[in-house]
Amino acid sequence: MARKPDKISLLDIIMAIKDITSDHLNFLEDKSKEPFLVRMEEVTKKAESELKRILRVATLADMIEGKK
Image (cartoon, rainbow, N blue to C red; front, side, top):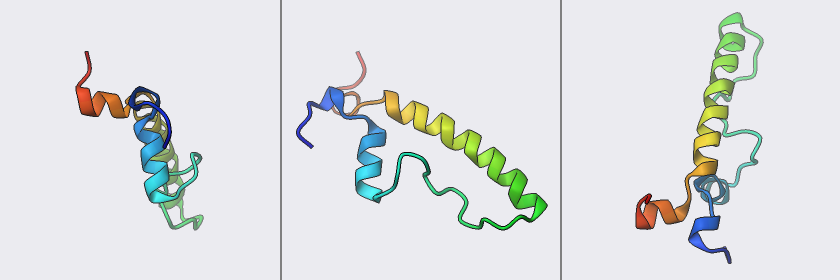
């Protein structure tokens, strides 16, 4: 990564390490249409969205230097 630490989000790092797309962090692997799994997928999508929002804001510089 050729960017400064304050320009590298934690989401960028996770995506690079885990080789995943920004669309999905793969919380729920089973994609069957069982009622429980359908509801569980809705919940995990909300959780995933919030997690990505937080990771997108936090930077490598925050982890190295601490937030000021």
